[in-house]
Amino acid sequence: MTRVAAIDCGTNSIRLLVADANPETGELVDLDRRMTIVRLGQGVDKTGRLAPEALERTFAACREYAEVIKEHGAEKLRFVATSASRDAENREDFVSGVLDILGVEPEVITGDQEATFSFTGATKELTGRADLDKPYLVVDIGGGSTEFVVGDDTVRAARSVDIGCVRMTERHLVAEDGTVTDPPSPAQIEAIRQDIGEALDLVNQTVPLASARTLVGLAGSVTTVAALALGLSEYDSTAIHHSRISFDKVAELTDWLLVSTHDQRALKPVIHPGRVDVIASGALVLRLIMEWIGAREVVVSEHDILDGIAWSIA
Image: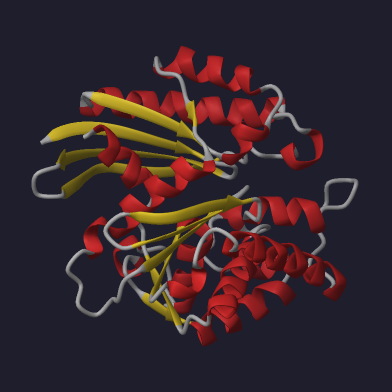
């Protein structure tokens, strides 16, 4: 076993996994897995810069994670940063802050690298499952971007496009004064649908979406929709992991999320407070992907890019 620590810093959240990994058996044993909503991508789509308050929220989480990593005695650490920090003009402020706190530089990876990590993390456990046909389409719906990966035992094709839940919300639902339209108007929903549709057409130019036989969905938007679909009274990753949610249920929940108010969504204990304003956009991304490829269900994975990062250093 090798004790590793992996950090995935996205547009909406930063997550830590400390685990013991055995590459020979394919076993990854969690010691600590946690997530903090930091909204690093706050305003990036509009300003092109990381906001000072967003950086401070992220650095506060990094200080907490540094203590956890030290406590568990991880031998190796890899910090991967995705969409928001790729796009920002002042990303050097982010890089230097992380280096000071954790002693490693965040790797601002490409969309293709992000897709490969996501695929590895999501599918490593699925090998040998007779009830799930290959090839897989792994869809990682993040805050700033969504990654699409088609593969069987290895990646065949991948593409990252800017249709994450935070980006769609900020682009179409946030007014000049920073308030979120609640609930969105039909015209706003149609604008989001248009963006997603154009992105799917773009993805299909290089990723054979129609060839996929099993859709695997990753990240907070998907797992939150699954928690709602399962009727959980509290978030339970064990129940969510490898659950299979039908298209009809995804469509029903998306319709409700798009007409609900902030307060109604906040009453659902499985929706993290940091996702209350962006979950409707994330659910709509999932629904339209399923419509586009004709998927009857999505297999939900709690293992994703974070696990892929851990395997990359094991």
